[in-house]
Length: 118
Image (cartoon, rainbow, N blue to C red):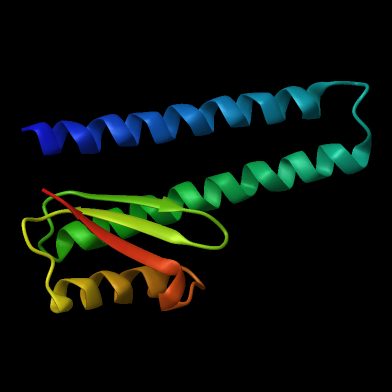
């Protein structure tokens, strides 16, 4: 049960952190003193956060459909970190997850890290 709670807590932390970041970016956008260039950059950042969140959900869902009980994904523009609830992570497991991540992102395998949490 400890591992299941780990995944729930990490997902909540990730989502809370992003919600706070989006709030701060929206404050920048809504501030009349913010110049248009900074507003545009803040809007782009919000869109990137949304894209990453969507891809994380898709990767987590597709991974679960391949038989993994619990999967947690942290995406950035440069890398992906995937944590899987599994006692033993086989090469076949790693290939399945790599295929999913590479299908949903433009990341190279060298920028994708897959770890087990048991």
